[in-house]
Length: 312
Image 1: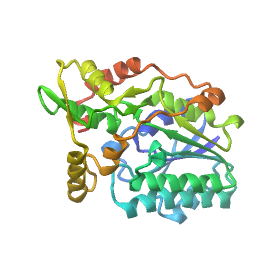
Image 2: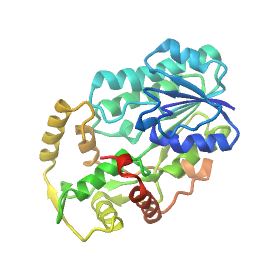
Image 3: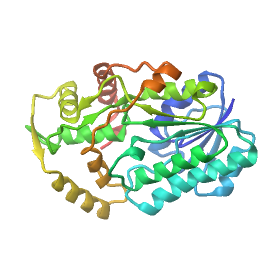
Protein backbone atom coordinates (compact mmCIF):
# COMPACT_ATOMS: atom_id res chain seq x y z
CA UNK A 1 0.00 0.00 0.00
CA UNK A 2 0.97 3.64 -0.42
CA UNK A 3 0.91 4.99 3.12
CA UNK A 4 1.29 8.49 4.55
CA UNK A 5 2.79 8.45 8.05
CA UNK A 6 2.48 11.67 10.03
CA UNK A 7 4.69 12.34 13.03
CA UNK A 8 7.36 10.42 11.14
CA UNK A 9 10.20 12.08 13.06
CA UNK A 10 8.91 10.80 16.40
CA UNK A 11 10.05 7.87 18.44
CA UNK A 12 7.10 5.53 17.79
CA UNK A 13 7.48 6.13 14.06
CA UNK A 14 11.14 5.12 14.27
CA UNK A 15 9.98 1.59 15.14
CA UNK A 16 6.96 1.56 12.85
CA UNK A 17 8.62 2.76 9.63
CA UNK A 18 11.10 -0.15 9.24
CA UNK A 19 8.27 -2.59 9.97
CA UNK A 20 6.10 -1.10 7.23
CA UNK A 21 9.02 -1.06 4.80
CA UNK A 22 9.82 -4.71 5.50
CA UNK A 23 6.19 -5.54 4.67
CA UNK A 24 6.66 -3.94 1.23
CA UNK A 25 4.62 -0.77 1.76
CA UNK A 26 5.52 2.43 -0.08
CA UNK A 27 5.81 5.30 2.39
CA UNK A 28 5.44 9.05 2.37
CA UNK A 29 6.70 10.56 5.64
CA UNK A 30 5.25 13.76 7.05
CA UNK A 31 7.72 15.43 9.42
CA UNK A 32 7.84 18.80 11.11
CA UNK A 33 11.24 20.42 11.53
CA UNK A 34 14.85 20.25 10.48
CA UNK A 35 15.65 16.73 9.29
CA UNK A 36 19.10 16.96 10.87
CA UNK A 37 17.86 17.36 14.45
CA UNK A 38 17.90 14.59 17.04
CA UNK A 39 14.18 13.86 16.83
CA UNK A 40 14.40 12.92 13.14
CA UNK A 41 17.76 11.15 13.18
CA UNK A 42 15.94 7.81 12.94
CA UNK A 43 14.41 8.44 9.52
CA UNK A 44 15.38 5.69 7.09
CA UNK A 45 17.55 6.33 4.09
CA UNK A 46 16.82 5.36 0.51
CA UNK A 47 13.94 6.04 -1.83
CA UNK A 48 11.25 7.39 0.41
CA UNK A 49 8.89 10.33 0.09
CA UNK A 50 9.39 13.15 2.58
CA UNK A 51 7.06 16.04 3.39
CA UNK A 52 8.38 18.68 5.76
CA UNK A 53 5.65 20.90 7.15
CA UNK A 54 2.86 21.51 9.61
CA UNK A 55 -0.45 19.71 10.10
CA UNK A 56 -2.09 23.12 10.50
CA UNK A 57 -1.41 23.73 6.80
CA UNK A 58 -4.59 22.40 5.16
CA UNK A 59 -3.20 22.77 1.63
CA UNK A 60 -0.08 20.78 2.52
CA UNK A 61 -2.21 18.04 4.05
CA UNK A 62 -4.21 17.86 0.84
CA UNK A 63 -1.06 17.69 -1.30
CA UNK A 64 0.44 15.03 0.98
CA UNK A 65 -2.54 12.67 0.66
CA UNK A 66 -2.66 12.73 -3.15
CA UNK A 67 -2.09 9.21 -4.50
CA UNK A 68 -2.15 7.73 -0.99
CA UNK A 69 -4.15 4.63 -0.03
CA UNK A 70 -3.89 4.86 3.75
CA UNK A 71 -2.89 7.34 6.46
CA UNK A 72 -1.30 6.44 9.79
CA UNK A 73 -1.73 9.57 11.88
CA UNK A 74 0.90 9.68 14.65
CA UNK A 75 1.55 13.43 14.44
CA UNK A 76 0.78 15.45 17.57
CA UNK A 77 2.21 18.01 19.95
CA UNK A 78 3.09 16.23 23.20
CA UNK A 79 4.26 17.71 26.49
CA UNK A 80 2.94 21.22 25.88
CA UNK A 81 0.30 22.80 28.11
CA UNK A 82 -0.60 25.40 25.49
CA UNK A 83 -4.34 24.96 24.89
CA UNK A 84 -4.28 26.76 21.54
CA UNK A 85 -1.42 24.72 20.09
CA UNK A 86 -2.89 21.42 21.28
CA UNK A 87 -6.21 22.23 19.63
CA UNK A 88 -4.65 23.57 16.43
CA UNK A 89 -2.25 20.65 15.92
CA UNK A 90 -3.89 17.64 17.56
CA UNK A 91 -7.52 18.40 16.73
CA UNK A 92 -7.62 20.77 13.74
CA UNK A 93 -4.59 19.08 12.19
CA UNK A 94 -6.54 15.81 12.31
CA UNK A 95 -9.52 17.55 10.68
CA UNK A 96 -7.23 18.78 7.90
CA UNK A 97 -6.07 15.23 7.22
CA UNK A 98 -9.60 13.81 7.30
CA UNK A 99 -10.82 16.41 4.82
CA UNK A 100 -7.82 15.76 2.58
CA UNK A 101 -8.54 12.02 2.67
CA UNK A 102 -12.14 12.70 1.74
CA UNK A 103 -11.05 14.95 -1.15
CA UNK A 104 -8.65 12.35 -2.56
CA UNK A 105 -10.86 9.34 -1.71
CA UNK A 106 -8.25 7.82 0.62
CA UNK A 107 -10.17 4.92 2.20
CA UNK A 108 -8.04 3.91 5.21
CA UNK A 109 -7.23 6.04 8.28
CA UNK A 110 -5.42 4.82 11.40
CA UNK A 111 -5.41 7.31 14.25
CA UNK A 112 -3.08 7.04 17.23
CA UNK A 113 -4.90 8.56 20.16
CA UNK A 114 -4.05 8.29 23.87
CA UNK A 115 -5.40 7.12 27.20
CA UNK A 116 -5.43 10.85 28.02
CA UNK A 117 -8.58 11.14 25.88
CA UNK A 118 -10.44 9.05 28.48
CA UNK A 119 -9.16 10.68 31.69
CA UNK A 120 -11.66 12.17 34.13
CA UNK A 121 -9.25 15.08 34.73
CA UNK A 122 -8.15 16.18 31.25
CA UNK A 123 -5.66 18.82 30.22
CA UNK A 124 -5.22 20.41 26.77
CA UNK A 125 -3.62 17.28 25.29
CA UNK A 126 -6.39 14.95 26.47
CA UNK A 127 -9.14 17.32 25.37
CA UNK A 128 -7.62 17.74 21.91
CA UNK A 129 -7.20 13.98 21.48
CA UNK A 130 -10.79 13.33 22.56
CA UNK A 131 -12.12 15.80 19.98
CA UNK A 132 -9.87 14.30 17.31
CA UNK A 133 -11.20 10.81 18.10
CA UNK A 134 -14.76 12.05 17.68
CA UNK A 135 -13.90 13.62 14.33
CA UNK A 136 -12.35 10.36 13.10
CA UNK A 137 -15.41 8.35 14.16
CA UNK A 138 -17.71 10.79 12.35
CA UNK A 139 -15.79 10.41 9.10
CA UNK A 140 -16.79 8.02 6.34
CA UNK A 141 -13.35 6.41 6.23
CA UNK A 142 -12.42 2.85 7.21
CA UNK A 143 -10.85 4.05 10.45
CA UNK A 144 -9.09 2.36 13.32
CA UNK A 145 -8.34 4.25 16.54
CA UNK A 146 -5.62 2.99 18.87
CA UNK A 147 -5.76 4.39 22.38
CA UNK A 148 -2.51 3.34 24.08
CA UNK A 149 -1.34 3.92 27.60
CA UNK A 150 2.37 4.71 28.21
CA UNK A 151 4.35 3.24 25.28
CA UNK A 152 7.67 2.02 26.68
CA UNK A 153 10.78 2.24 24.52
CA UNK A 154 14.28 3.56 24.99
CA UNK A 155 13.22 7.00 23.67
CA UNK A 156 9.97 7.16 25.67
CA UNK A 157 9.67 10.62 27.31
CA UNK A 158 7.44 9.18 30.04
CA UNK A 159 9.97 6.51 30.94
CA UNK A 160 12.82 9.01 30.93
CA UNK A 161 10.87 11.31 33.27
CA UNK A 162 10.50 8.36 35.62
CA UNK A 163 14.18 7.47 35.45
CA UNK A 164 15.20 11.09 36.03
CA UNK A 165 12.99 11.22 39.12
CA UNK A 166 14.29 7.87 40.38
CA UNK A 167 17.92 8.98 39.99
CA UNK A 168 17.43 12.52 41.31
CA UNK A 169 18.23 11.75 44.96
CA UNK A 170 20.69 9.19 46.38
CA UNK A 171 18.51 7.51 49.03
CA UNK A 172 14.88 8.44 48.33
CA UNK A 173 12.37 8.52 45.49
CA UNK A 174 9.47 11.01 45.78
CA UNK A 175 6.05 9.68 44.81
CA UNK A 176 2.83 11.51 44.00
CA UNK A 177 0.69 10.66 47.05
CA UNK A 178 1.20 6.98 47.91
CA UNK A 179 1.68 5.70 44.36
CA UNK A 180 -1.30 3.36 44.72
CA UNK A 181 -2.82 4.18 41.34
CA UNK A 182 -2.26 1.63 38.61
CA UNK A 183 -0.29 1.80 35.35
CA UNK A 184 -0.60 -0.45 32.31
CA UNK A 185 2.48 0.20 30.11
CA UNK A 186 2.96 -1.44 26.71
CA UNK A 187 6.20 -2.20 24.84
CA UNK A 188 6.77 -0.03 21.77
CA UNK A 189 7.53 -2.98 19.45
CA UNK A 190 4.31 -4.69 20.54
CA UNK A 191 2.39 -1.50 19.85
CA UNK A 192 3.78 -0.83 16.37
CA UNK A 193 3.16 -4.48 15.54
CA UNK A 194 -0.53 -3.84 16.21
CA UNK A 195 -0.56 -0.85 13.88
CA UNK A 196 1.08 -2.82 11.09
CA UNK A 197 -1.23 -5.82 11.64
CA UNK A 198 -4.33 -3.62 11.35
CA UNK A 199 -3.47 -2.10 7.96
CA UNK A 200 -5.56 -4.46 5.82
CA UNK A 201 -7.42 -6.32 8.56
CA UNK A 202 -11.13 -5.70 8.02
CA UNK A 203 -11.87 -6.87 11.58
CA UNK A 204 -10.19 -3.67 12.80
CA UNK A 205 -12.22 -1.29 10.62
CA UNK A 206 -14.40 1.26 12.41
CA UNK A 207 -13.21 0.23 15.86
CA UNK A 208 -11.44 1.87 18.81
CA UNK A 209 -8.90 -0.27 20.63
CA UNK A 210 -7.57 0.29 24.12
CA UNK A 211 -3.95 -0.85 24.25
CA UNK A 212 -2.00 -1.86 27.34
CA UNK A 213 0.66 -4.42 28.10
CA UNK A 214 0.48 -7.85 29.71
CA UNK A 215 0.12 -6.60 33.30
CA UNK A 216 -1.43 -3.86 35.39
CA UNK A 217 0.85 -2.61 38.19
CA UNK A 218 0.70 0.05 40.89
CA UNK A 219 2.79 3.14 40.18
CA UNK A 220 4.74 2.54 43.40
CA UNK A 221 5.61 -1.01 42.35
CA UNK A 222 6.53 0.13 38.84
CA UNK A 223 8.93 2.75 40.21
CA UNK A 224 10.54 0.20 42.54
CA UNK A 225 10.91 -2.29 39.68
CA UNK A 226 12.53 0.27 37.36
CA UNK A 227 14.89 1.28 40.17
CA UNK A 228 15.85 -2.38 40.55
CA UNK A 229 16.38 -2.89 36.81
CA UNK A 230 18.60 0.22 36.74
CA UNK A 231 20.88 -1.59 39.17
CA UNK A 232 20.42 0.99 41.92
CA UNK A 233 20.53 0.23 45.61
CA UNK A 234 17.17 -0.01 47.31
CA UNK A 235 15.73 3.43 48.03
CA UNK A 236 12.97 4.67 50.30
CA UNK A 237 9.83 5.71 48.43
CA UNK A 238 8.55 8.92 50.02
CA UNK A 239 4.89 9.98 49.50
CA UNK A 240 4.62 13.67 48.58
CA UNK A 241 1.24 15.46 48.66
CA UNK A 242 -0.23 15.86 45.18
CA UNK A 243 -0.62 19.59 45.84
CA UNK A 244 3.18 19.97 45.84
CA UNK A 245 3.42 18.40 42.38
CA UNK A 246 0.50 20.47 41.11
CA UNK A 247 2.16 23.69 42.23
CA UNK A 248 5.47 22.64 40.65
CA UNK A 249 3.65 21.80 37.40
CA UNK A 250 1.98 25.24 37.34
CA UNK A 251 5.41 26.88 37.70
CA UNK A 252 6.92 24.70 34.96
CA UNK A 253 4.01 25.45 32.62
CA UNK A 254 4.70 29.15 32.92
CA UNK A 255 8.47 28.93 32.62
CA UNK A 256 8.95 26.34 29.86
CA UNK A 257 7.41 25.77 26.42
CA UNK A 258 7.91 22.03 26.99
CA UNK A 259 7.76 21.58 30.80
CA UNK A 260 9.54 18.66 32.56
CA UNK A 261 6.04 17.66 33.64
CA UNK A 262 2.62 19.30 33.47
CA UNK A 263 -0.63 19.36 35.42
CA UNK A 264 -1.89 16.76 32.97
CA UNK A 265 0.96 14.41 33.94
CA UNK A 266 0.15 14.93 37.62
CA UNK A 267 -3.56 14.31 37.02
CA UNK A 268 -2.75 11.04 35.28
CA UNK A 269 -1.02 9.83 38.46
CA UNK A 270 -4.18 10.32 40.49
CA UNK A 271 -6.28 7.98 38.33
CA UNK A 272 -6.02 4.24 37.75
CA UNK A 273 -4.92 3.12 34.29
CA UNK A 274 -6.33 -0.26 33.33
CA UNK A 275 -6.95 -0.73 29.62
CA UNK A 276 -9.57 -3.16 28.34
CA UNK A 277 -7.49 -5.18 25.87
CA UNK A 278 -10.00 -7.96 25.20
CA UNK A 279 -11.05 -6.61 21.80
CA UNK A 280 -7.52 -6.01 20.53
CA UNK A 281 -6.51 -9.51 21.64
CA UNK A 282 -9.47 -11.04 19.81
CA UNK A 283 -9.26 -9.06 16.57
CA UNK A 284 -5.49 -8.66 16.19
CA UNK A 285 -4.22 -11.59 18.29
CA UNK A 286 -2.35 -9.18 20.55
CA UNK A 287 0.10 -11.00 22.84
CA UNK A 288 2.38 -8.43 24.55
CA UNK A 289 5.62 -9.04 26.41
CA UNK A 290 5.54 -9.47 30.16
CA UNK A 291 6.30 -6.34 32.16
CA UNK A 292 9.55 -7.78 33.54
CA UNK A 293 10.86 -8.70 30.09
CA UNK A 294 9.83 -5.35 28.61
CA UNK A 295 11.71 -3.41 31.30
CA UNK A 296 14.78 -5.63 30.97
CA UNK A 297 14.98 -4.95 27.23
CA UNK A 298 14.22 -1.22 27.37
CA UNK A 299 16.50 -0.35 30.28
CA UNK A 300 19.35 -2.36 28.74
CA UNK A 301 18.87 -0.32 25.54
CA UNK A 302 18.85 2.96 27.49
CA UNK A 303 22.08 2.05 29.27
CA UNK A 304 23.67 1.32 25.89
CA UNK A 305 22.61 4.65 24.34
CA UNK A 306 25.31 7.28 23.65
CA UNK A 307 25.24 10.02 26.29
CA UNK A 308 24.27 12.71 23.77
CA UNK A 309 21.14 10.74 22.78
CA UNK A 310 19.82 10.13 26.28
CA UNK A 311 16.74 12.15 27.18
CA UNK A 312 16.52 14.15 30.36
